[in-house]
Amino acid sequence: MKRASGVLLPVFSLPSKYGIGCFSKEAYKFIDQLKEAGQSYWQILPLGPTGYGDSPYQSFSTYAGNPYFIDLKTLIKEGLLTKKECKVYDFGEQADSIDYEKIYNSRFKVLKKAFERFEKDEAYDNFIKENAYWLDDYSLYMAIKDSKGGISWNEWEEALKNREEAALENAREELAEEIDFYKFQQYEFDKQWSQLHAYANEQGIQIVGDIPIYVAFDGADTWASPELFQFDEENNPVAVAGCPPDDFSATGQLWGNPLYNWEYHKKTEYDWWIKRIRHCLKLYDVVRIDHFRGFDEYYSIPYGNKTAVDGTWMPGPGMDLFRTIEEKLGKLNIIAEDLGFLTESVLQMLSDSGFPGMKVIQFAFDPNGGSAYLPHNYPENSVVYTGTHDNDTTRGWYHSTDKATRDFAKEYMNAQRLDEDDLAWDFIRLAMSSKANLCVTPMQDLLNLDGKARINVPSTLGGNWTWRMEKGQFDEETVKRLKRMTWLYERLPREVEKKIK
Image (cartoon, rainbow, N blue to C red; front, side, top):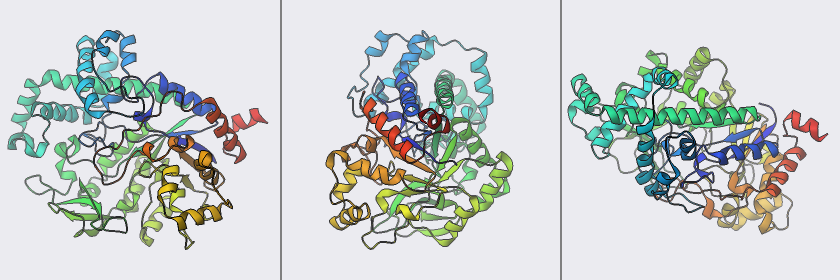
C-alpha cells in the first residue's frame, strides 16, 4: 500500500434527499470532492440491510445490500416512480439526522410501486442466476419474516425453522410476489452501487468496505446454513459472541452473534468464507475485517447468559483461514481491525498475514507514555485514523477526556493550547504526518464537529447510526485545506502531485 489518504463517511451519512444518504447525485459529488482534495480512498461501513437497532453490523444477510441506499431519483428517471409518489411519504427530512422508523414505514411502500412497474430483462435474469447461491435464501427468508410480523426465524413453526422442503415449497408458492420484490430490491441496489463504484474508480478513488466478523442471529445466513454455526440439534445457539469485562465495562459486552463451527468450516476448506470474501471483492477495492482478533481467539459466552462475565476464550482458525483464502483468491487488499488488547499470538498472526493494522490517534495519549498508538511508534504498514465510527468525534473526545490526557496530548504536540475552531485539524495533522502508509479521517473531524455528530456508542441501543452531513458542509475551503495537508505530508496521488509541481 503506497502512502495515501482517504475519508471515512458512511453512505447513510451523505446529504441525499428522502431522509437518508444513498447512491444519489450527492454521492457522485462527494467522490468528485475527494478527487479534488487529492484523496485516494473512500471508507464506508457495511452495506447490508439493517433491522432492529439500525446497526450495519447486525444485518439480515452477509451478501444483501440495504434497500434504503437505492436512489429514488434514479428510479424516477427510469420511469419506475414519479416525484408525486415520493412526496406522499414522510421520510423524515431532518437534514442532519436519520429517522429510521419513518424510513422503514415509507421506503418499502414506494419501492413496491417501482417493483410493480418494473419489467424483467436479460440483465435482471443474469443477476438472479449469478447470485442465486445467496439471493434465493435471502429473498425467501425476508418474505417469510414479513408474513410473520418480523419475528426471528427461531420463533417460526418447526417445519419452516428447520427448513423442511415441503414447508419451503409451500412458502415459495404463497409468497412468490414478495420473494420477487426482494430480488428486485437487490437488483436495483447492485446496479446503482456498481455504477457508483465504477465512477469512483474512474476518478482514482478506491472504496474501503467493512466486513463484520460475525453475522446476525436474526438473518438469512444462520437460517439457511445452521451447520456453519455452534447450534444444538434444535438449531438454537450453544454459545454467542462478545467481549470480556474490562476498564470500560464491568460486565463485558454481550453481542449475541452466533459463533462459527470452525471445525466444520475447516472440513469444507472454508468454502463459505471464500464465497463471502469473493462477494466483498466485487463490492469493494479494499476490505477492512472487523474484530481481527476473533480469528485467533474468540470469546464464547454460554447462550442465555445475561452478561459477558462468564465467557471463555476459545481458539479460532488462525492463519489457516487466511492462507486458504489467499490460495483460492490470490493476494488480497485487507485491513485488519486489530484494536483492543492484543496477545502475542494475535500480533504474530497479524505479522504472518502481512495485513496492515489500525492505529487510532485518540488512543495514543496515555499520560504514562509508551502507547503503541503514539505516531512515532507506527510501522509504515499500518492505517492511522483520528477516530473510528465507534469513537467520539475528535473534538468531542478532547473535551470529554480527562485533564491529564489533554495535557499529555498538548505536550506531545508542542502546543500550549489548542484552538477550539481548529482543534480536530491539529490531530489530523498528527495523523497525516505519521509514517503510516494510509491515513483515514472521519468526515466529522474534517468538519471539526463536536460529540453530537458521533456515529455510534458501542453497547448502547437507540440514537446510533443517525448522523448526516448537511448539504454544503464539505465546502470548497475544506476541500482545499485537505488537499494542502495531503500534499504537505506527501500523500497525494502521483498524477495529482505532478500537476502541482
